[in-house]
Length: 187
Image (cartoon, rainbow, N blue to C red):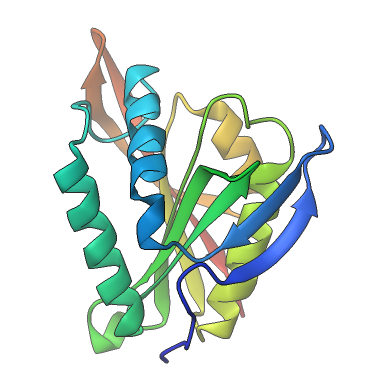
């Protein structure tokens, strides 16, 4: 199913716990620098991500171009969260690549430090679950490092359950970390 979403289209507005307005919208080309700052800030803080090297502007432009192309083909949904005119979070749902898996969506979300524990992640997840239903998906999956208890709490709160675990999937700072697979059935 292809969705006719325009770049920068406002999808939802809400207030964070600290009173600031959060705007969920589709990304636009002008977001590339904010998105680059977002991902590199997460790498700097050594957030639980599967990559460790900072991204270049060219890599971020390529990533955004691929994402927008996937959206145009109906293979994915991308959105950003904006506070005070700046992108503070990014999220996506990618549809299974094969016809026999087209009912399956893989969800990803990142939130900048300073904007966590304000209800923003929970609200984004609730919106994404609704969007997944509109896309006709039946199951949503995501992956989260076992060390990311804050994210696991949010995912459980909106209904995700652990369905698998890859032990010692990541080696970081002298420790092995499990990769947890979580799922939510939408039917």
